[in-house]
Image (tube, rainbow, N blue to C red; front, side, top):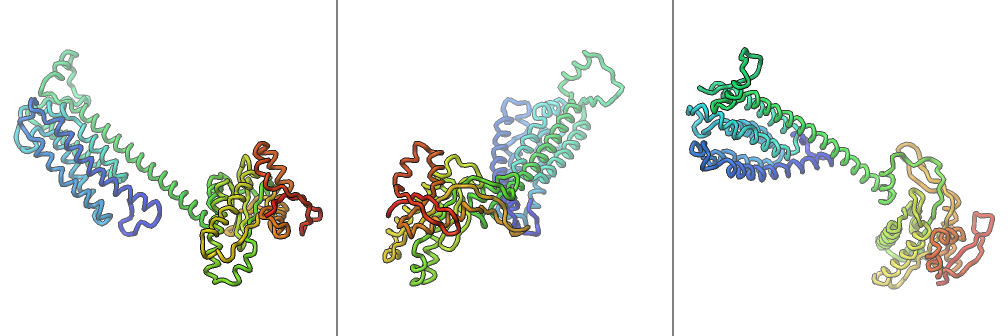
Length: 454
């Protein structure tokens, strides 16, 4: 239950407060259903007790509890003490109705056989039903509180039954009565007989049920707390990392291993001519453009199973199969690249603000080994992909200007694509019919590339 003095600030406290509020409203509804059930089940005109009391009048005593629960549900913690007081009254009333033949006239002495009939006819069924309803409040303390007063009420009821004139009881507590089998049968068949031991056993069962329910609800709250903590941690993680990367890091049982070598695809996407574009425009307009471009790139990369590693000004770096095992990383990366180029072109065509200076996107794709691990120390740690494969992908993206293409891919990338998707590769590579060997800055050997002519 939320604290009475502090507001519910944590996600777990907000979840519990919300569920307790819903639970009180549900209990109010079930309370009405319980009253209707008891009325239909026990208000029998041919019953020996039917003429001694009218359950409709007795059940009216439980109606105010509905309004109390609804009031507390909307009022909150300040009025929660009323629920505990109501639990005490409910426990006493439910036992009272279960053992008193005529609840409207409690001081009236009835024939001894009537007490036995009432106990056998009603027993602890009302108590079990009410306990099942109390569970819906999702409060272990309230469950235990109600169970305690239910136990106290039943102890008082058993003592009261034992003192009724003419009632025959047998407690089986080592008394000196040693009857024969026939005497036991005859005694049990007497209408005045009340089996106190059996009734006490039923009460104990109710108490055990209460304890089990309290433990169950407590365990459930622990699980919800753990789930809320996990969701909170994942949400905080997603603030600093792309959603796809945050999802994968959250699913790992162990952190990313330092220096883990992976075969992966690297994608670099950049806005060609962005510096000239930004020079003549308001910074807010430039920021709006960048945010829209990043949103398009991020959504398409994520849609094809990639992870945005970082934003570098107007450039985006993404990896495929660096942190997880993708079946077709090269095919996915190429499809993502084509989707980014297409969607940016469509966005610029629809946005009048970009009509006077349409910009093009350059994409570089490479496949090869890279080192995946954490960069930084202690609190300042960032998952990263580094290596010559990453550097080459960045250089290939820059080469789109010289080659007059929107996409440049390495021969290693094309080979990987043909290997992982032999049927789809010819279709995907049909646009990239231009081949060339280029000298890339920072690499001693020439690099074979494929690209399309725009």
